[in-house]
Length: 408
Image (cartoon, rainbow, N blue to C red; front, side, top):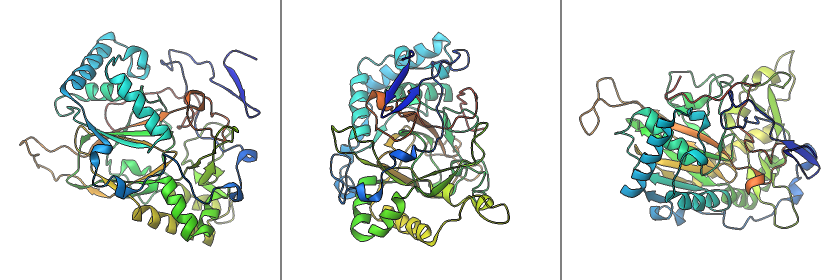
């Protein structure tokens, strides 16, 4: 077997050799891929009720923020600040940041506990108190990415190789869902998952109104759907959904991916496979250019699928936990078993000032997509890249990773 080649479940995967001059941390984002269809389990194999530590209810946490929030202490901020300054001083490009060159001797234990909770526990957490209003964008970005390296490997979030994303209203038209990513607008986001194992958001500046976060336990949503709408659950488990890639594809790839919304983990025989989900409704409803007219190449959404999306959204909203992010807050979520949404928002009017009398900044969140591969304790997914360090994400050909410090 060649070096770096690993065989699992009959599928070989390889962290492909890369040029360090292009991929400074030594790994390339794998990208979007269809599942291995022979490993997609039928609805009959799914549990009637999902149990375990990944299942939670909003009422258990709504009045108990201490269960999912930690405010950084002065000592922890000092440790993060020192690690950040040392990394910047080294001259290493931000795309080359890793645990090995971002030292957190005290916080590392807390971050490892959090990683386990994100992967195998409730799947969400919020940090508070990073002094983003005192630091410039370079220091904010470096501290944030350094913390992220303790949870996973950063992957590209778009076709331009952005491994540090920026959730900001750039004035793009949210109705043009076939080519506009909603995070670049101020529109509402429906309950969805992102294209990585873990997603992080660092709040640099909040909006004048709105832009608040809602999250729901995938396994609570699944159980309620199984109880009330088993027909909807079955529809969501069928691998006949098409997901728009919005032109972010490499040579030879299709403009869409066919798959399910709900999957089961691969069964290793040692544990009960868990249900996990992949869905962004905007990437489902944006495919009219391929499923209508004389050149139709894929089927349009069926009435069953339209109904399933409607019931799914209402159920997530009913079961959700509301979360507000203030400047200096960091939210980390597991995409495997937590759905998230965002309310529409309005930015501060021109000339507005904040509570400290300074010019009000437009809403700005820095975003990370992090991979937690199966080879390092992550979920066992029916995809050919399940073992790779940087599974998932969006990779177009050999586009190198970049870390813009603001939206572009």
